[in-house]
Length: 90
Image 1 (cartoon, rainbow, N blue to C red):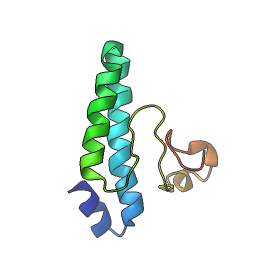
Image 2: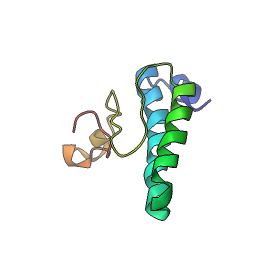
Image 3: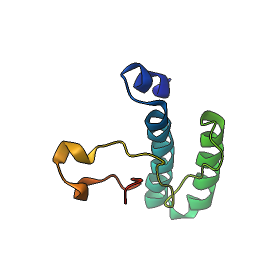
Image 4: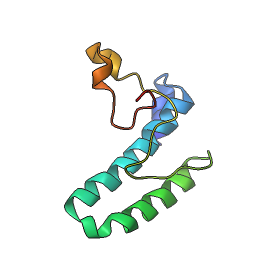
């Protein structure tokens, strides 16, 4: 539903999938900050969920995740320094 809403707003499917994947991957980082002992379990669950919702192969959640496309967020600030933590441009 999140991807469909992004697409309906004019966001390309590639960027929309990356937004969904980024949210799943970021959840791993947030869980790990609170519960480091759950790091691998969080990575496993998030990766499994991403594999169910994203038809592209090779999606892995967690700190090593990088988008496959840029969401162009940095353009809001006018600086490439403001790239997302999982930006494809970094």
